[in-house]
Length: 111
View 1 (tube, rainbow, N blue to C red):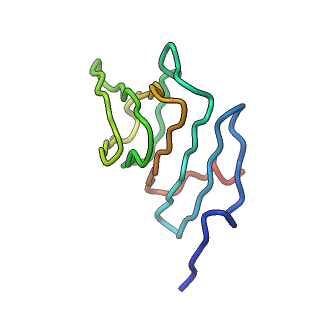
View 2 (cartoon, rainbow, N blue to C red):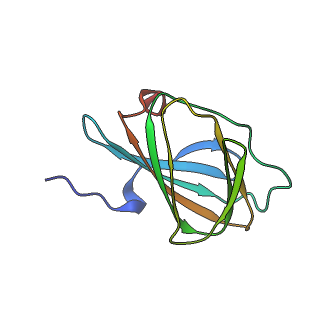
View 3 (tube, helix red, strand yellow):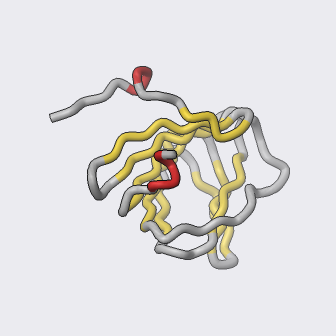
């Protein structure tokens, strides 16, 4: 059974201060999203995707926005997103780490 060390996973730069590392099977993907670009004055743009998503806040604080609701989340909190529902985050601390799980896997993340 494959095992992975976080430091050995390739880091994919999304933008300045944001990168992701991922592992997947044929049907499930886990993504570690590190945000180090500081507190955001406004939320990230809303986005949606056809994947189911469950996310765990491992470090830092974020506002989670979905369906007109804003929820402040801290380490240990979890949120879920149904397919095709617009959602966004707003980092509230200098560093945030989210552990995102997707099914099916996000082919767009593999490119």
